[in-house]
Image 1 (cartoon, one colour):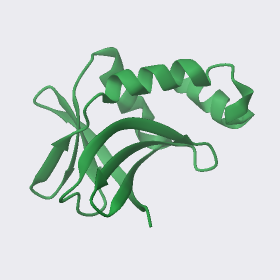
Image 2 (cartoon, one colour):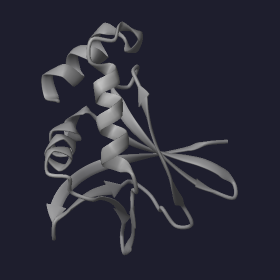
Image 3 (cartoon, one colour):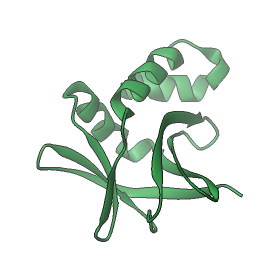
Image 4 (tube, one colour):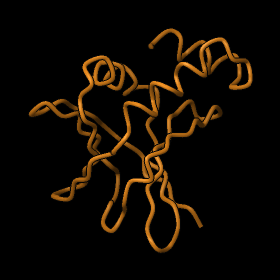
Length: 119
């Protein structure tokens, strides 16, 4: 079964964007792919381990920070307590996804509107 970890806050520090996870990220590796959850209005970065996939869920309140990181090409890291991992290929994936969402009704009108307003 796939697990979901919510990002409960984000901040910039030392030229990195840190996404603060709600639970442990131990043993997870970046899968370098971002999906969209149109029902929850979130972007979902996929991480994996030997048990399956874990979804790092980034809801709308942190999107302005994602936008700033994207514009400045700042590396994105996820952390929980002392454990941190770089989300490789994050900015490229997010940029491609945002360009695909704009004006694309397949994601739902409300998701498109929210993305277009922020990004």
